[in-house]
Length: 278
Image: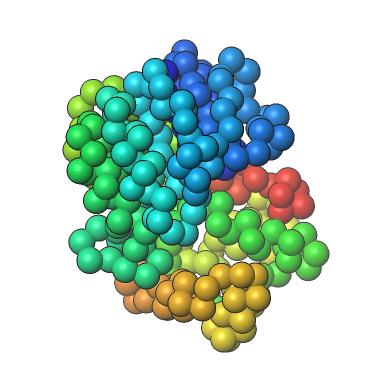
């Protein structure tokens, strides 16, 4: 039995699907069962909230492995959650590139959880994922309405990764030996500027989609208005500015672990074309 937390999120849903396709028994942890209607048949659904460890009673019983996907921006409840998970044989944690060491700010909670996982006594694997391709879905409304994207740093280069590939690496680590103690930096197979990403969305849709450069201050105000803490908004913008001269690296970890090359951003855009108005 493998427990997947955050099972209604993009990576969690893919992990549940891939595990079921591989014939594994799956228990999906969700905060709202009403959002789980599109999860595959044959898995066990349990209600629980990682922010409330008391709600997880019984969730880890009989479980051999855990795919720990953390949907919160704080590690406050992580000590109790990881302690409960320490009874399992294998624990895979979805972290982020740059976590570890003395990383703070937006990466601080990942660093804190990584330390707990490494000290848990289980066979652990850390997935330090680069940028999620799915994060560019915040462009979707604007593309549907005007075929434009207004944002700063058109020349910031990113190696965005498909959520299917993130899940695939986690599934391999949970279902095969040889990944114990591994720290995997997983990325997409190419580095593209934000302007190139927008252009590729347009190619998939069969129409021109333009990137319009805007001041960083405007995007910061939008982030904060959407509820993002100001220091998080600043960190995101600073990271994008740095990617102009220091692009995100590209790794071959997805292919090395799964035996299949990582999916390109164009493939991801095709998989999500309907959300962009295709």
